Image (cartoon, rainbow, N blue to C red):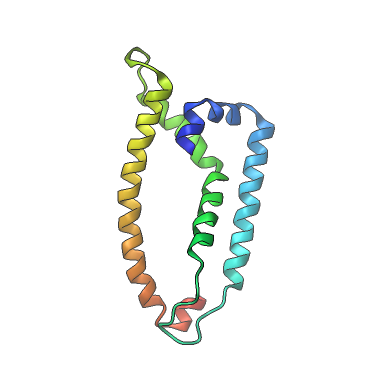
Length: 134
């Protein structure tokens, strides 16, 4: 999504238009405060090792909203991708899209590794109610 935003020029619009950028930042900040409140109120499993019921679709959608409302990501893509674009090599939106897809591929590998080890660590944390509260 962020690659598309930069490729079609919306990223530059967000940075240039202070009102739109402020709205995006405010929405992102409000959503992070909401997520923090939800995490603070989350229940702790009374039975160590038992996983609480989790709606995976809800967690996925929460991640999407959090990512799309993060203005730092748009600024990163706006500052990072154009550095590698060469106007003589073809359509700039296509080059940005290819670069963005390369970034996505590398991110899937890196975050996949992080998710794998987080799953292992998460199972260990479930063994202690004290660790869950912390």
